[in-house]
Length: 550
Image (cartoon, rainbow, N blue to C red; front, side, top):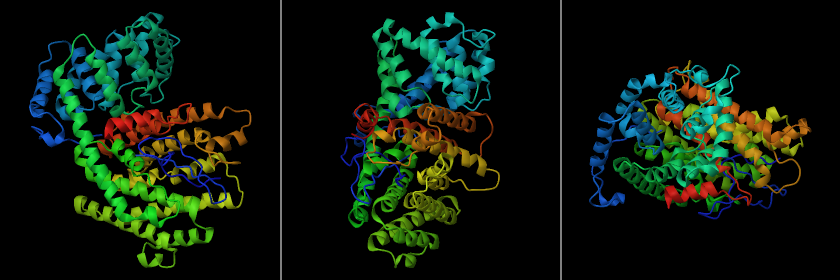
């Protein structure tokens, strides 16, 4: 059973992102990499200099002012205001107008009780996203029969169905939203061939990449194309969105270059035999998960942690002997550079990088937020190493774990909890009594979603004989007549419902908006990272990488 459970399943070729080929050595095992990781309040940049890639005659502040005027003096009804808010959110530029959006949501809440499907579902979704406690079952009851089935007459309301479909993915266990998803999906797929081309493309994209469970940064470009083909257009919104795309791309390119310089100076790719050299893939997680111009340093530091987890994963899976791993594990628990003296040279290099990077982050957190998280971070690294040791023991003793035991440990060895913990402290949080359960669920749900998605597709990126160490393989052994894929998809849906409850239940959270949205973005990124096509390639990820970086 392969013990590799870090971040990605790619070949080493960049920027083309294909599934990984088996790695020779270490008993013929292949290394399977599993992997990971809203916006903060952004300081309006005013007139952007030419270095941002904007034309000299483009005034960023003027564009912001024009959109603000639109929100303050919209000529149409409440639906028009909510539609504008929806456009801003889908284009990822809503963070500039949070005060205006909050006011609009307060004034338009009455639409949720109307008899129009689009009005009711759009209001319901935006209110839930804004933190209002609203019941989908109560709102949607008027559109259904006594048995809960939706009125067939709604099947002709394409935009209402689209909004119903979008809302269905914010399910927190409500029976009406299960039926809403099935009803809207069925009738939208049937209607596609009868719609005008622009709307048909939009419907197909909405079904293939559902709202809420897909990355807004990826869907934003498609939504802009859709808006540009509408009978009425708002150039202020479009111009601001295009400017935001360009500024973000330039910032991501600068961050990527800094990460590359750090990686080259570190020299781990040369010191550790068989180590992967995939800085672009490691950076894609924090770039996606942690949005906001003010979080640039955090994205860079999180990429460093991800890269080190990846190298540790390779050491456990492909390089070290069991005796060396035991020494490595004990040295991590001691958290002292002198403890690494008895290790092989390649492990010493990795230990120093891990130790220095983690301590640097702890110092940064203490300087910015006043608390030193190093003891928590040390414990998280020790927990990760123990998880790898457990997997190695299962492999070396031919001891097949139960699917439940495997999954519990696999969430740890994904590296997601460790990375999220670093991010938690970076954002100014602390582990105190009363918030640990909430933090646990916000981290464990996306980590479990990642593990299940990855293991469900493991046959596409593995070529090894016998047990491949996936939950799917273990479940099939325990349930030879069961449908493993169906079972795992149900588990993923259940984790999404749990995550939605943590994020949208209306209860006051001790966690910041930025951390909660990072958790959501992490879960969304999983669909991109493991969206294999029939040729075992990752076309969505390739498209997404070109869009945001090249």
